[in-house]
Image (tube, rainbow, N blue to C red; front, side, top):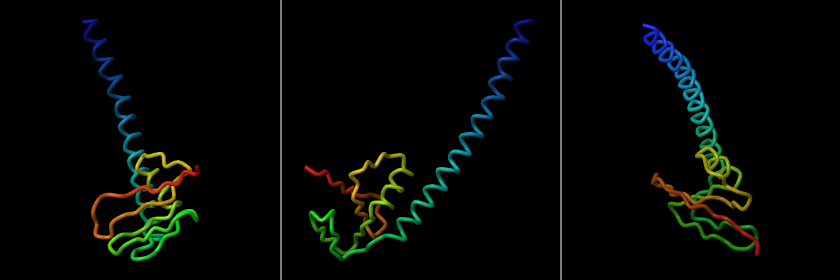
Length: 112
């Protein structure tokens, strides 16, 4: 009988803390979703659609064709961070398709 109560105590203990953990995970998921939404709003506000020329750190010119868009560094950093990446200080921006495809190209500049 003593083992039964011990087992019941263990199940209750993990059940209580498991619920707190699930609540914390749910709150974190809501925060992440809110940050992703805010990052996407930043991207949409700063998006530079092609065709146009994009200066890359005064070192090059990106000839962005139609059906593509450029996301400047600040919005790109926020978006990549919201996705769980570490963009780094050398991020110049992103190139994304305008047709809704799910990919992006990261543009970095490393002085040498």
